[in-house]
Length: 291
Image 1: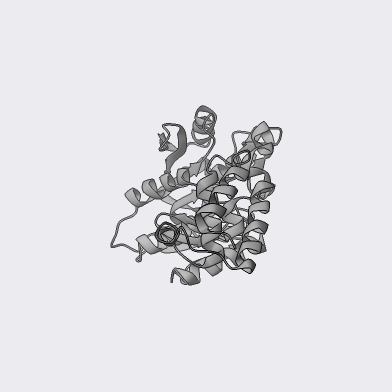
Image 2: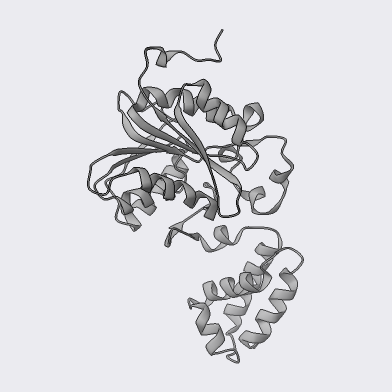
């Protein structure tokens, strides 16, 4: 039988070639096997593992060596201080997306029943977080994938935000005649030929939630165009996008006549979220991309 400190050392060395956080990955996976917190590993480094635990641990290490993301192995990822269930049917939550939450919360009163919709909800992190942080808000969410909606509903139950209205819909296509104060989305925005798609965790995530036509801008254009018919006058549209897409996304917003268009940087100082305000106009039904 192997001691905790010994097996962690061996696992860290094995993972070093495939992970930038080899020691942390090894600890997380051993905690998963043992059903313990990481503090347990530090408190009992000399404890010997049972053979069945050792076998299961090395199987998980092999998965991580093959590139499988930690979040998919453990089935969980933290976002906005809450733990969310994730599967390969949904994107892995990332800290950058917390910027969408920060900006949305600044626009949402704490004591008024404003209406919010999250487009392409995936695991539900945006809709659920906003519903939890603003209990008076009426929150809806859409996703085209039934598998993703199943994950989102499970997370909504877990975090006691069962009042969220979920729609199977390609963006707003199946949301009829309803208007919102806030429309928020983290849509696919990576070009299909982008080299990043062959690197790291992103290799294992659903491509339909990552890639878009028109060099990554097709879904952003659809959302910006159709959101106008679902926003109250004075309402806001917020969209997460790539670090190098700021100017193109701002142009899309302006082409569709949004006001007060701004882009905000993420924790790394990269342009990450663009938002604008919609005021009703007679020409709202027209698309600047139509002849």
